[in-house]
Amino acid sequence: MKRIIKHSVYVAICLLTMVACNQGEGETVESAYVLPLPPEPVYKFARSGNSSVDVQECTFLSQPLNYIYNSYLREARLTNTAMYELMTDYYFNGQYGLKPEQEISASPLHQNKRRAVLDDVQQLFDTCKRISGYNQNDSYNIRRREAKVGSTGYVGMNAGDPNLFFVDEKGCVVAEVFRNYMMGAVYLDKIQNLHLNDSLYADSTLITNHQNVLLVAGRNYTHLEHHWDLAYGYYNAFWKVMAQADGLPILKDSHRTIFEAFVHGRIALKIYHYHEVRKHLQTIKSELSKVIAIRIMNLLLGVNTIANINEAPEYAFGFLSQAQGLLYALQFASTANGVPYFSRTQVLQMVAQLTAGNGFWEQNRLLSDVHTEGSLLHIATQVGLPLGITPADIKR
Image (tube, rainbow, N blue to C red; front, side, top):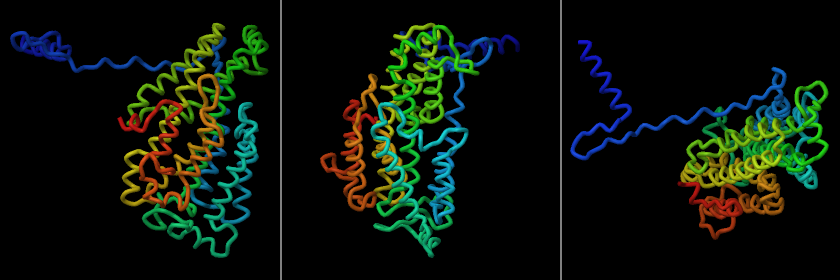
């Protein structure tokens, strides 16, 4: 019996390892077994036994923005002055000293457009007020009416649907535009244009202080280390999920490429190899810009979007609104050398094309060919062009 068991185990091992088990003359069985990927490196750095990484700022800044989205915009709950003031208090004052309004378009590269971006945000708030029936005697009825072409309202099975969302006259889900716009105007801008600004890692004063281990007062990190760590923190908390493939083969290696660049860049910083730091910095910028373009293109041309537009256009409004928000965010994406891929003017032109006329209700325009201005294919092609990505690449 033991001999039989030993023989069975041996056969099983042969089958698992596929060690040239011949099943016929000249026949070799090849293994379909794929070796597991090596473990992902850990972003963990310490000095004198204590962590030298502090990314709490990322959470502290996101909390009021998430509250604005979840408690006010998503549910169109700006029905009166008191509620609007509560929301704007989170926007202007935030918490823990981090004020969302002050962090929008705050990098040196985008300071010149900051006022215009803030105006965009205010317009979203004003639109949500209109959708909510702000200070109207029949605000309840305005907020709870079914959306139609040219009229604000909800999209869902019925007014009690827990998954319903609220749209403006063009079908735009203001909450989704806001959330995705902030992905660029706050988080992406901080990653690419503030904390990974190439000039920081060539600044003689910062470099000298770093090499002399001059720590930030009361902290366990140098200024350069903290800049790098905050860029990682904002990526890990907000953009990592976008960079993961999630059924998109074109993103198969994006997260790992970005993550390893962050890890190896921090290691290079530790040993004062600043040319290596800048090389990894450039990798992060170019790959992350590719991620946002791909996500926009997929939201515009993805299977769920197209299927919904064909069957029930209003159920595609959420996807299209996310794409609109990321189109706004695209003005903060940059090349490896820190040059914006798109100007604000170009971004606004694409948003105008997407929302022209009756906006997302215009089924025929949205599904038209690439030569039709305002078609999803036309806009997606514009987004991918500077990065060398085509609509066909998204569908592979």
